[in-house]
Length: 97
Image: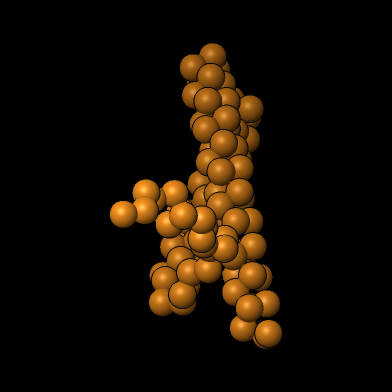
């Protein structure tokens, strides 16, 4: 039973990493747009540099999360995949000879 529990936790961890990766990607896009907008209006201003710092932070978090997700998927690729119960009723629909 411990192996199934470990597998379930790893699947949940992969899902959570995927959600965090999407969140960090969205933050990177938003802070990139904010940095570009602030840089266009007032180049070298404090709001531009704050946006650039947050952009760097979000890109670093996105990179680390993507790396962790890639490593987890590579580590889990050797495990057997368990899907939902197989459908058993398909053979009953064939015409009898």
